[in-house]
Amino acid sequence: MKLAEAMSRLGTETAFEVLARARALEAQGKEIIHLEIGEPDFDTPSNIIEAAGTALMEGMTHYCPSAGIPELRQAIAEYTAETRGVNVTPEQVVVTPGAKPIMFFAILALVEEGDEVLYPNPGFPIYESMINFVGAKPVPLVLEEKRGFCFDVAELREKVTPRTRLIIINTPQNPTGGVLARDDLEEIANVAREHDLVVLSDEVYERILYEGEHVSFLSMPDVQDRTILLNGFSKTYAMTGWRLGYGVMPEELAVHITRLMTNSNSCTATFTQWAGVEALEGPQDTSYKMVEEFRRRRDVIVPGLNAIEGIRCAMPRGAFYAFPNVEGTGMTDKDFANYLMEEAGVAVLSGSSFGKYGGGFIRVSYANSIENLEKALANIADAVAKI
Ligand SMILES: Cc1ncc(COP(=O)(O)O)c(C=O)c1O
Image 1 (cartoon, helix red, strand yellow):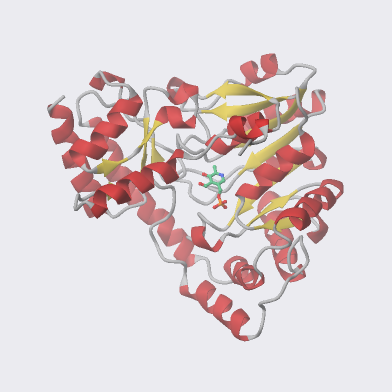
Image 2: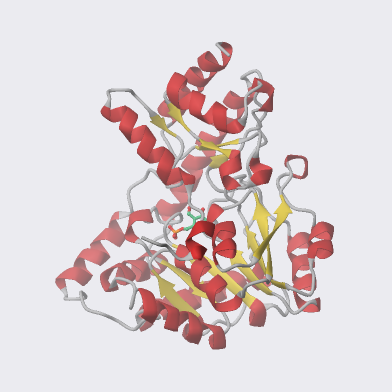
């Protein structure tokens, strides 16, 4: 079958491939500790599950408006207004099955062949994949270890050309755990205004933060008419399998993103949206407890990795990933990740699967029990000693 040419430019997310490989090894009887997949290992809070159950029993099993049920759009608008200190109307909200489609739709709606898009590298691999897919040019904003995995805003300014259309930012960041400072966000806002650019701000890890308060790009002055906030329920409420996310954007763009929803999914599952209303309006303590548990795990995994010769790991400030430099092992990041799977029974991702500038690093998801993290550290130390 002859595929459309664009398909040759579509990338992927390695996490799912590595997970499949780990499962195949498990099927052969090998024990694997899973530090590859980016999802909380906790169950969804029971009040949220109950809300979905009630919605199902009450017959919320039909199509609903493509942009989402009015109650959830209203709850998201209120939540976003309150946490960002800006006015948000429900008409600015588009609910999607997971936050990921907002990336897909925003790039489809705004970026044309030959345009340029600035995006973090290493970064969530779908940004680069989608930019390539639409025939645009991905222009990396390099996240450097020595800068706490933040990009240089002066470099951002230099990389803007007349073809630049969109800037993608992500804070707290996957895969590095880096967090953008308020000053940097202000400067990004200046660049966006000066050059009439749109900013897609991926804030799905907003609550998984270990120092200070989350600073949202949407809170920057005079950017609300050029910002798409990408947010969701997967990470904050341990709801990855529910597929529930959203975008908050100027109303004129929301109309078009909604049309993309009509053309693809029709709408997001109705009863999961009722669970989303409960997630936002119900008690938040389980979600905050989860963050505290992530902090405890971070404080085990990072010193543990640093104690292994050849590995150097910066302290992540957000999300649930450590991003250690493994160049000192003498292996490439890809070989090292494969070696850990085979030799240590520990599944991790290579840094270069998050883009060229992730080379020399691995991503370790610490969304696993302290017991398993300690076991993984011991296995990694043994495997490294054998190199
Ligand atoms: C940076 C980032 N953005 C967005 C997503 C997508 O989340 P979901 O589609 O589950 O809401 C992820 C998931 O791993 C992520 O790491």
